[in-house]
Length: 372
Image (cartoon, rainbow, N blue to C red; front, side):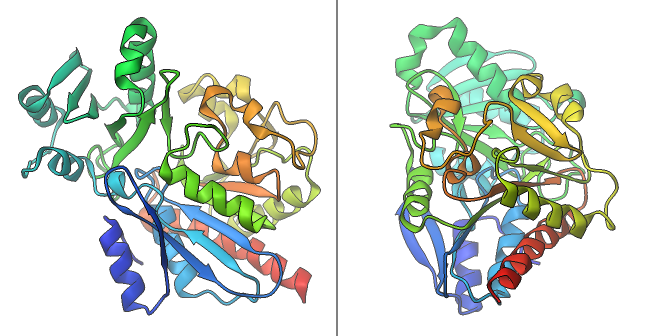
């Protein structure tokens, strides 16, 4: 199993395995955006991973899938959508300040931010927000009840809501946040990975699985969206990590697309013997209260968009996302079944990868059978 910590490690893996790749652009930090294209017959499948760099199991699974690709239909894959955050919080800091740093605690980051910041916007015992050389850095003290990077997002959005005069100053800037998981979360922890995003012109924290279809698409989003529009895929899969220790699936068009329902049932059947019950919407809403207003759970472990009640076809999906646009899955759903696979982040890395591989192979096998 490959464990990837940088775009260079990803490129080295492809070269070692003699896998052809394309560089489709570079991020604002200068890292390459890598795409794999496997030729084949019929309509293509698109798979992405690493949009949230604090969720590395999808990247490892993507490496395994492309290394062992055996299907006759075409594949387009973006295996590492946020190569900057993938490096981890310390490496992000080093890239921006130009010197080595050592981080093992909230206090370590606090000391560095206070020392290096060009501007300090918030300095509380539990949250900091600073700017260093035009890059924003958040630091959020680990709290097991509110674990994960979303607390940094909430705090940043609250700061901008309370200080709207700062929005023009923040707009377009990248923000680096700690992954903020328990240190026992394998290959993630609090600072082993970073979660990065950008501040929109509306003053909203938007990560790289947002803003599809808006006029503010960063390169990490634009090259993926352009590929979706070009190939009009038959299936779109996005590999993520979510709450709990098992699995669940996001499917924006589950209630209106019979093929989506069929494919998700294939995925559930593939993992149910190895894992306990899926994580439920009630558990997600306990951590992110807005989830109860935005989503419904048509069957256990499947989360659907509450506002999509008809087939999307070619209509404008951005209206469902507001200023943040929509996710990869939300955008791809205009063309095909689109599913985000969420493996439970508190499980072992091997089990998180296993959820992805079993889910992906089950639906790819189903498509191959349809074509035979």
